[in-house]
Image (cartoon, rainbow, N blue to C red; front, top):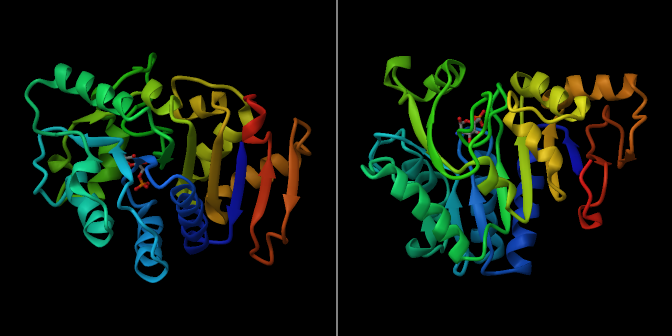
Length: 282
Ligand code: GLP
């Protein structure tokens, strides 16, 4: 796992976009798994800039979005369809038949979810999955629970997620209480995963995931500790509790820390647990 701690949200977004752009340049027909929420907006803005100014080419890129609210039409401004068009797809040269986002209006949910996973398989699986993380540790809409679903499914949103996401709606009552989401298995089968977290509201969950060294269904994002190629990009606010805990413990685990420049100077800090290529998890 590679952890980058960037000075602020803008640097985090630039780092994330650079990594995605390098992946696209290396494999122009890459299958990208995409996320929504506030966190990746800066990354998408930067990818749009790279497309416009540096000719980053999306013509062969295939995308699969993680999730969509259930019961919401693509034209609804709160839908993740709308979000993706608005923040990314309308501004790049991606072809619409290469874009996949769960259909929040499907009536045949079970069949639809199976089909979504089949479609991902048809393209050879996801090469690179972008993730945000909920304050309660959810990824996609896989909420903390006693058990986690492996495949794409209809998920019931937790009270805390409904509350957190109500900022995008007129009121909390308008937030759908269900969503179609890729399951933990669908996410974990991605060849590479990159998780972004920004702001103090994510500091506590990030510290828990990165310092406790265990996976639990009550923090779905902790499953990422079992994957052998994960990059985590944090800004200093999201990393603040993690930094203090890891310093206190003296990084006694199998950690290699490379500090490109001091935190104080606001430089980027790369902490390498294990190189992705080693094929080991933590
Ligand atoms: C939503 C999405 C997640 C996202 C999370 C965090 O619930 N389903 O994919 O990671 O919110 O969002 P934000 O980046 O706005 O904090």
